[in-house]
Image (cartoon, rainbow, N blue to C red; front, side, top):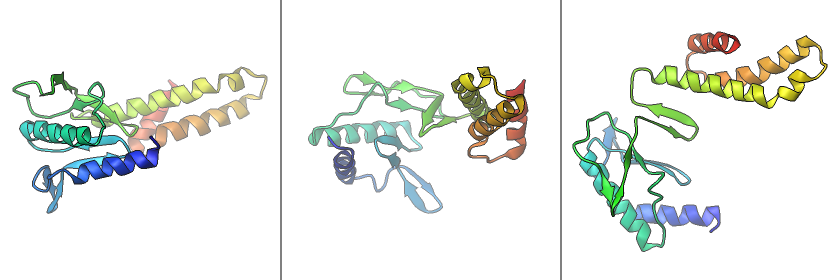
Length: 174
């Protein structure tokens, strides 16, 4: 199925859902899901409601010939779940962190630290991809310039807090 057709079919499936009263209210607006292509987050302040929404979504997708990939479906909550959530004998895994659209989401106080650690890892990955340049017989000032450009960009992308990112940059060098 082409990506555009898939997104259109997925949009149709979401319009079939009666979620007007489900989800959370933020500034007077109800939010019950976030979507980017096939990356979907369902939002609620109740695990029971999440289970109902997952079941309804699964049923709506099944009607049009699509299925949920239950191995990729995760639940993240700041509540202590009283029971495991299952949809058609598929147990949904409870996680404490998740990468959504390239950003690691974690429900804890160290969320920013986790984000910086991930950026540092991306910086070292960018460094590793340039190993041929760093092994070549090139003047050190050009190697330093390449390192700074690639790694600083990888580390400082989405720079919400420059002080922390500068600390992360120092950590990248050590």
